[in-house]
Image (cartoon, rainbow, N blue to C red):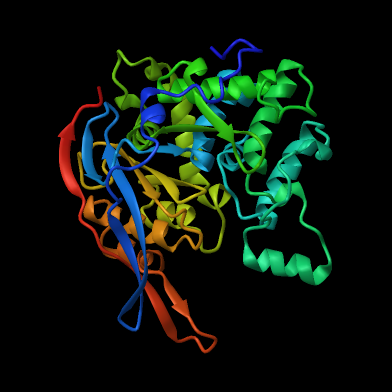
Length: 382
């Protein structure tokens, strides 16, 4: 059941981890080195953790308790709010529309058409979206075409427009004002936050919140809890029966399969690891990136070999990874070391595994090289 409207998450109400871990005791390990003609120009440090649905740590490097803002990695779990409220049935939502609602999409025409069709069908005003247009569209070819044609990007092309639509639809479903859906104390926004809290196994009033770049709340958790959330997304049936999150299993399965079946809507058709990873692994994993170098990966049962159990992996690049090379290289390498990516899949993902910078003549000028070793561990989250 969703939170009672008006019960808002308390910004700054920190868990023990968030209140005490204000800075690192030791530097994060180097995950990726940027190399040009044999010279290391820069490094990307960070942390990696993999856990199963019960919270047992499988692999770790660095600090698994580092507190991170979820940013866009929250989107698959925010969609749970709409599913729990009956929105899929009420609005007859299709699987591709659900996939878009989990996305940080590239702002391509495919994404805009899907979203506009939904708004027309539900007679929602196009002006309601309050995610802005900063950085939209992500897709370089689409941005160049808009610039050539003198067209200004609209909120439709913003990477977070699908996620905002979740809260808009919650507002419509509840009969609440649409124009202020983005405010933290709006009852639809409160329902969204309550779903995140449920997925992470905390009370809504214990959420640690901040303001995301698109104007709605973001939520902070230890990295291992991010990995665990993606582990239960990978295999909702594996959630222990005594875990309250087992009540989310059916809705988590809907979210996971929408992302597996429509990866281009989760990210884009060109140069997006979240899309390419799903396709290279034939849907045996689901990936969701977030700003500031965070990524969660849901590794489905059997992804490694017959009989392998599901898990979740979270990767955080300490410097924020503005070029995305550190996050992509570290993600593919971590999945390789965990036995998830190999053979043809690894070859398919080569451009993400060792991202290359080229000069104007197409020559390789620099390369991001992942260099780390994941440690196998066995520990239960207390």
